[in-house]
Each structure stands twice: as structure tokens, then as C-alpha cells.
Length: 503
Image (cartoon, rainbow, N blue to C red; front, top):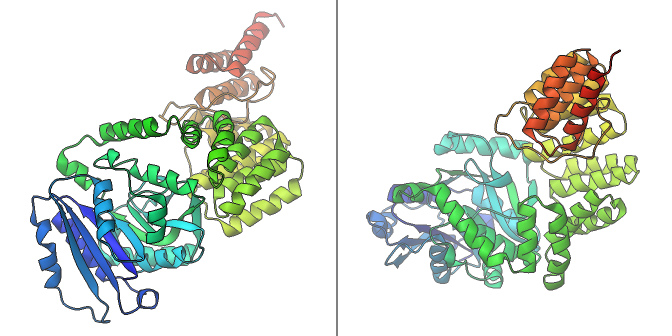
């Protein structure tokens, strides 16, 4: 067999039947697999329903019109040993030279498997490929709701994706275990899934990290669609999904907290760019093929203002993972800040031509470009960049703050107040750390911002309109929101002093 599809399941027989039917309906596989077709290995994790009789059900299905065979193989485990153990048992029984690891509560669009296979074979450096889905973590998620529950909906979604992105792929640092295609030889290199993660969660983060340490590319095939019902097993077991997620996160941290690569990964996941970069130096000594170490070091150099070093490190990363939009965003920023703005714009164009920017990545790109324009005093250009980002990420407080600053500098104070008022609302969006201190009471606060920074800028707007009372109120709110924000404190102190002095 050229392909073995491994599906671990506990109960949910109707989901599994629907999943298998969607696999039988795949098109475009004959030229990729040949007459041997593919096999489906179902791992019954001690089910209590009719899952154990699925082989009889498949045997009663009519033959496929194109003559392609879909052979079913059952592996029965006495108890529910979890997703990782189910995958390991299924792979041990599989005969294919390529493996598709799949959740049973999924439904594949007609060309999903063919697209994944074509992507895997497009570059020997690609270790694993995943599709996009309606219910998955990270950049593979697309907001399409329940449209993919029907065959017609999946066909329409797939056609729209193929028309929009073609064969575009996206480099990512990790992939969800929802659906993974890899070579059997790659599975043997990485090793078995770690069964300490039990029912599921973080076994895919662990597997992705181990794959990255071998220097493998992990990519999303942006035109391959898989509908996912989501958390069916956890719901059937009556488990608290969030609590289970926290437990698995602790297990992952405990496994990797003493490993150089793991400490860098954990620092990066917590947003500590400098620590991630520092730990990456040691990590690359023990895992020189690990591509993310170069990006961590590049981001750290960028934040330190060492732009030439950042460029060199980020280029080294992009040679290994050339379709990572965030890597390109960092490179454009480093090139711009190194003073080579024409080259930065050219690199921005190359990134847009060759990479897929999901809404979050696109917003990040235009946010950084907008802030660069603000630093150079190009306020109209900055406004256009922020508006571009907000078209796909409308209520992001950092983007709204940037837009407000650009409008304020253009003298459009009332419009600035409108944008900044939205940014200042405590709506649960994340708050960012303070940027470098600016002259209090005179210049708006730019750069990384949260609610406190937007509140400070609202104070500046009202100050420029001559409303000292409203300005003081906003400065006080900013300090109350974030007592550690030096910019807010300085503006409040300066405003109080100015109000207290006659004239």
C-alpha cells in the first residue's frame, strides 16, 4: 500500500462511518496511489458501541465506480488507552509507505487527501502536512462554521479555497494532530507518539517539536479542507476539556523544562523573546538542525536593535522554512530598521507573493509596517497600513491605538478619539507591555500598546482640544489600568503640574 489512514477511536461509530465514507469519496488519487489504493486502519480503543463491527459494515459497502480499493483493517485494544497509544498501535499494523493520522470525527473534502499527498511530495524537506479546518488550533483554522458538514458544503469550500490560494503552503512551527500526513520513514525517525499524554492534547505539540529538532518542515496545505466536529471524545467521556488541557500542558512543560530546546520553546510560548533567543544558542548546540532556534535568535536581536544580526539570523531561518509569513514580517522589519527601506519594501512584496498571510499574520505585518511609518513621521502611510490591518482584525486594541496615533498626528483629533475609545475598552483583548518612554504630555504613545496606552493617548487628544479635566481623567485611568506604565505615569505627572501652574 502507498497510503495507510490510521484512525483511533473510542465509540462514536456514526462519526467513524461518516469519516470512512468521506475517504471513499476522495478524488484525484489514482495517479498518486495507483491501483493498489489505500488502506484504513481503525484502532478501536475499547469501544462500547458497534465500532468493533466496522469491518463487517465496510465489507457490505458497494465497490467504488473507478475500481479503486479501500481496504479496512481493525486493531482492537482492550481499554481506552488514548489518542497517542491508538496512533502507535495503528501505525504498527499499517503497511503503507505514507501515513495519514486522522481523528474519527472528521469529514474530508473531495481533494483533501490528494492535495496533502502532492504537498508532501513537493519537497523532501517537508516532514508533515496538515489541512485547514473549521475547528483546529493555530493558523490552520478558517472561520467557515458548519458549512463543511455536508458533501455539498465541503465541495463548495474546497472550490473556493483552490480558486483563492491554489497550491499555497504555509510553514508553521507546529501542527495539530487532528490530521497529519507523513512518510512512514519519517515516523520511524521521529519515533512513536508519547503515550504519557493519555486521551489527548499536547502529544501533537510534543511530536511537532521532535520533528522540528530533526530539521523537518511542517506545513499547512491551504487548499486542503477537513471538517471537524470537535472534542466529541472528550464530550462523550464527560471530561472537562479546559482542565484536561491544563494537565497536558503541565505534562509537556515537565517533559521539556530541562532540555535546551524545550526551555527555548517554553520561553517563546510565554512571549519572552529575549529569554527564548538566549536559550536558543544552547539549543542549537544540541540540535543544530532545529530551524526555530534561528528565528528565536533573530527576533531577540531585532528587539535589541541589532538589525544586521537579526537579518542574518532570519535569512538563515527562511532558507529552512521559506513560506513562514511571520518570519518574513520580522525580516522586513529588520531590513527597514537597518535603514534599507527600498529593500524592505521589495522583501515585503516577495513575502506577499510567496506566502499565505492568515488574518492574524496579515494584521501583524501591517501593524509593524504602520509603526515603522509612524517612527519615520509618515502618518498618512501609517494610517493606510493600520486601516488595511483592521479590515481583517477590526477590534484589535493595538491596531486601533496605532490608527488613533496616526489620526492625531494628522490633526484629525475627533477621529482619533473615536479609534482610541475603542482601543481603550477592557473587552478582554490582551494588554501589551509598555514601549520606550516618550516626552510626557506632548507626543502620543506608539509601538506595542494595550488599553493603558490607548487611554494615555485619549488624554493627549483631550489635552490638545483644551479639555484639561477630561485629559487628567484619562491619564488617571491609564495609570489605574497599568500602574507599571511609565508613559502613563509621566503624562499624568506632567498634566497635573501644568494644571497647577497659573497661566
